[in-house]
Image (cartoon, rainbow, N blue to C red; front, side, top):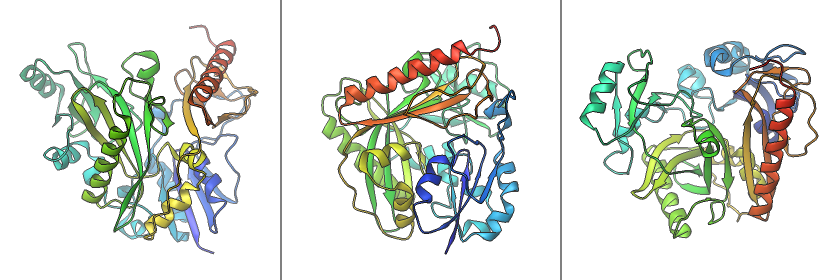
Amino acid sequence: MKKLLLIGIDTRSMLNSALKLDYSIFSTSYFSTSDTPTIENQKIILMEENDVSCGSFEDNFDSKHLLEISKDYIDEVDYIIPISGVSPSEFSKKDQKKILGNRDVGDIEDKHKFYKKIKEEFLSPMTFAINDMDEAFEIDKTYPDIQFILKPVKGSGGYDINLLDNNTDIELNEGEFILQEYVSGISLSSSLLCSKCDAKTIMNTRLLTVNDFEKNNSFIYVGNILPLTNESIMADVENIDGLNDEMKNISERLAQKFSLIGSNGVDYILNENGLYVIEINPRLQGTFECVEMSLGINMLDAHIKSCFGEIIEIPKAKYYSYKKIIYSPTRMKYEKIDLKNIYDLPHIGSITEKSQPLLTIIDKDKSFEKLYEKVELASEKVNSIAKKRQLDKE
């Protein structure tokens, strides 16, 4: 039996799918949620304990540490699937040969290089490489009618993105950040499967950030709603079929341009000027479980097959699916919450810091209205319980 390693920030959802396949599974992850399957070959960095804080993910996560503790697994397995948090470029050339998925991602993960590759062919926000804040402010003065944002050159999940204004005070190291035109609008995403010869869009989705709920200019990823319809886009769009077709066309052209394989995602922003290409996620995406629920397929199996040249027949959506990550509204100690649609659960008694990921709500329904109501009611309940279990006065 071939040996397969899943490695990334959180392997829970992929593990559930992997255990249905004919592989010997290995897993290394940062998070250890209480609903993560326990397997023989498994390493976890954050071992949650009673009355102990889980700390800050942004401060504590280090992909190099994840790779370091995985070294024996990497040597032993036949195949590796890197998930969010670990780049294929961080593996040695020898170990990259084991990766099922994209290996050469330098022109995708570097957002300035990506912009230079696509700017003549696709609508995209103006992007500059910068060395320091003085350079950022000089560019800003040159374009007085444009709002800019600072973004890490490499990064995902919407972390460390800041609007540039006169009060912005960030210390930059050369090559760390880009300055990008801020494009306001509706956040969207495409999920597609790619082989060396073909690319097919699986599903278009409404992408959600903190700003969609709190209007606070935080761009941290919160979740998705799919498939993309007049209801799920939650905005007034005249021709949803035309939009879906346009996203499909652009995503598949990008897949061919960058020779993508496996499961990939393309993020967009839609406004009155059109459909802006923001970035490619050259790996399994956060829509993983939503797509599985909606289509009734095993996404990990579909990813692996496409890496070996076979793109599965993509069925029609049977359900709407909605994923929403809850970031803790307060510093709190976790106790069991009696809901059936919550995942990525902390261990009982562990402490989650304010604004850190607490858990994820994922559900499905044939009715968009019923689904939205179920997830939002669960969200209200989780936030209410978290506030009641607050440990410190703020």
